[in-house]
Each structure stands twice: as C-alpha cells, then as structure tokens.
Image (cartoon, rainbow, N blue to C red):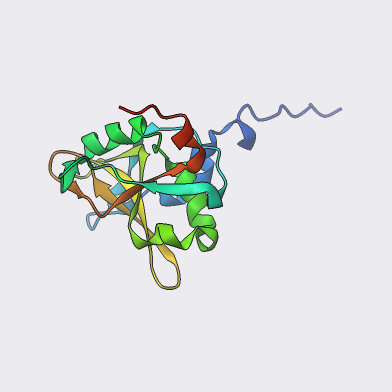
Length: 167
C-alpha cells in the first residue's frame, strides 16, 4: 500500500489576501550587475469592503496647504478612513472601467501599503492614474524627500462620512 500524501501545510486559502491580489504590483527586477531586487512590504492594511460605485475621493490637505510629506498624508488617510491598500488598488485596477468618471480627474493614492526599496532605502506607496484607454499604477516616495501635491486624492467608501466626527 502506498503512503497517504500529507496535505501541504500552506495552501492558497491560507496566504494573506492582499499578497495574492496584488503580487503583480510588487516591484522586482535585476540590476545591470545581475543583482536581483525585490521590494518588501513594510505595512499593509487588510482589504476594505466596498462597491466600486460607492467610492469617493478625499482631499488630504488642510486649509491653504499646497502639499504635505508622505507620512503626514498617510496619518491623515487613517483619520479620514481613506487608508486603502494593495488589495484595494488591485480591485480598483481590475474594475477601473466601472469606477465613477468623476474620480478619474486626479491621481488616486493607496497609502495603506508601505513598500521598501532595498536598492535606495526609500519607502513608497502606490497611486493609480487613468490614461485614455487604461490605468497605470505608479509608486511615489513617502519620506521627507518628496512632498505630496494637492492634486492627488485618497479614496474611501461613501458610507464612511456618516461615521466620521467633525473636528
């Protein structure tokens, strides 16, 4: 009699959803010298429950600010409940054609996932832009070297507005 095959200890269902859904967006490449580089995820939020049509854009600047550094933008995203991450970006990317057109006039930032580039030591978040026939995913630094301009927006489900307290 043959031995019973033991099930694998880690099947697909046990892998965290954000890594399955967004693995295509984690940069990896080989340098000219042949060194393999793969960015790491330092922080990642769980997927948010939302319908694509129920998303709204949120400004992260206050008063007369023209820009803020990345960590400030990320802190404000948490307070505004607009802290979407990698799995959420993948979902928006896959369904970009059904996203309300009014959301496409600005780059949409997904600050809930923080990436680390081992080649330059920088920390990055994802953002998405719409082009005429598709959308494009990009990365931008979130340290004190880059200020996020006011033309970028965060996304959050519309139902969140009811739960936020005025401050």
